[in-house]
Length: 111
Image (cartoon, rainbow, N blue to C red; front, side, top):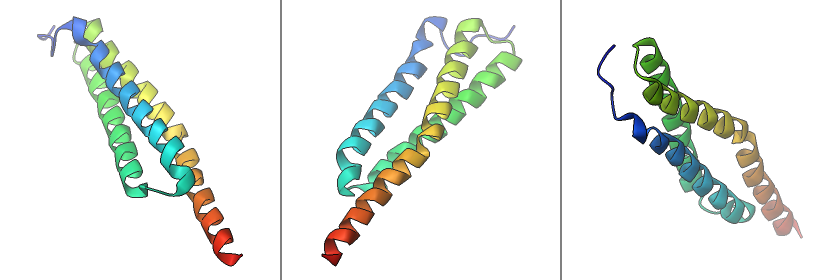
């Protein structure tokens, strides 16, 4: 077995990071998207979280294949899988929120 990439007791850090980015993104979408504000910032944070989740998932799979301890590969893989799933499924919700804001803006201009 290879030397652990990091101490197993720090495996929770990846799940916390996914949760924090999910919370930040959700709060920003809930507060800013109905008004059509900060679209670039919200999408930038969203895509950063997606890419970070996918990197975590890939790193977890590599750790599993390379024989890392359970605490190393499990923390990476679980955070990456959940983050990829949650952010991936919510992409259309995010796009739809900004589309609705744009539609409301256009309807208001037509009055």
